[in-house]
Image (cartoon, rainbow, N blue to C red; front, side):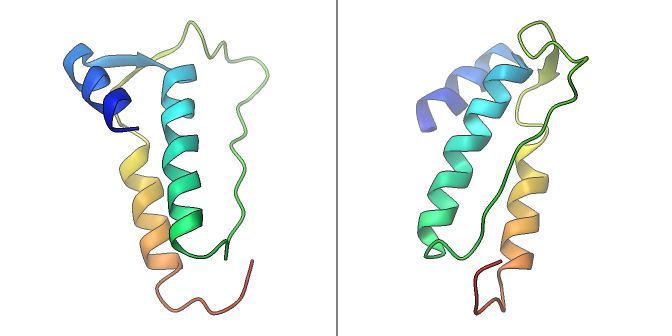
Amino acid sequence: LVRDTLNASVKGKVTLEDEIRMLESYLALEKLRFGHKFDYSIIVAENIDTYDTELPTLIIQPFVENAILHGMKNKKENI
């Protein structure tokens, strides 16, 4: 995850496929950190080509991080 993040930050843009892969790595680590107290799924519309669509680096991750940190702050059971 760290290597991918550093490589992506140099490029400035990543494919949606790469962004999803980094998100999956990040979410797996957070799930482990929170003792498997949450599940997640990443859904992409069928008409979006994840290999051809480019995004600014780490555009989605801060929103996911914020949702997990605030959503799990007082969580005691699995969702």
